[in-house]
Image 1 (tube, helix red, strand yellow):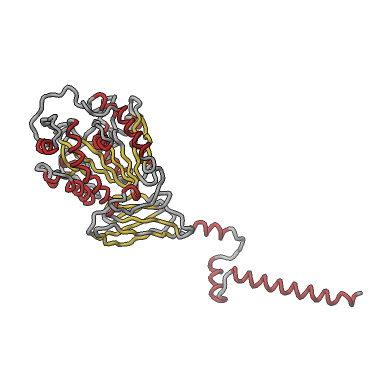
Image 2 (cartoon, rainbow, N blue to C red):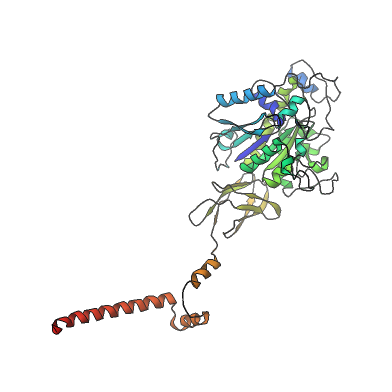
Length: 453
């Protein structure tokens, strides 16, 4: 199972894991962020008391003072790869406008390999999950201390939109956006989370509506997304206590609509269930606030991964003829959204909210579809499907037409009706009789040969 944590704000937590400091560059919004008084005191309790102080601090000379540079981040990522080479792989999915590589860390017991592994235990994430971490999606924007990239384009408005014909020109998209889109088309991600700053809430699709009004606009898997967002929020130190967002979660269009966002594109085009996690009211937290952010979100991240793997239905889809894996489509009756099984193993994992009954339908061109009903409880359910090939009537007709016979269908029917046999059976009988007659004739000729002499 492939799970992705992306966006530049995650750099904060990743860098803290490296025992250093990091960067942030991109967020959902920009209008609702508020600053709070910082402190040079490193006392944990003091920082906790001040963490959500809404009083504005004086303007800062450098918002990213104490953060890693892009060069330092790249160095730290590669050092981690060398230090933990047995459980990690470092690779790039592309480059920014200014040519900075977009590095990804894959953490797994078999990095770089595709596996069918839906099982999960809290202490076995490395063994049972392929976790991909993109520390920063917008390195150029971080260097320039702004939201847009080097071309001053907001990357979280640069994806194709489902409601309006925007960003449909491939040539006009930013290289960072193209890299993400190609990446998700190549990898079979089950779920992802994009980490932002500017609020404290777990946001889920849809991010916009067809009439651009601010309203609750539910996607087909609305109940499942609410479940995932609540897992994160209630595992957080105080996200679920929000006075602005009930339970610390929100539908994107209900909060404020955006168009061209990555969250909706992932869900629609890649079958990847993505949450947008706003993890700090301040877009540019001070360096001494980073450890608190990590502590507040650490269990939320782990529990989110656990919930994704431990719920839903998973298994493999194979052909009854030869047993080869099938990249079939998996649909749930009543939910207008499908996912595809992996082509290598035929493995699938369909995230579903627990506590309900679901009708699972599997289909594949050239094969007979199959349907089964499951009662999903708190743990994930394993269901394998064996699909039977569909007989090709056109092929059978072509084979029949290759036989040069003058008998029509009615004659065939009469033969079967009166003799109870088919053409094949008649042919075999005739061939046997002819062979027997030839044998007798040959024997008679050899018997009479001495008399002629």
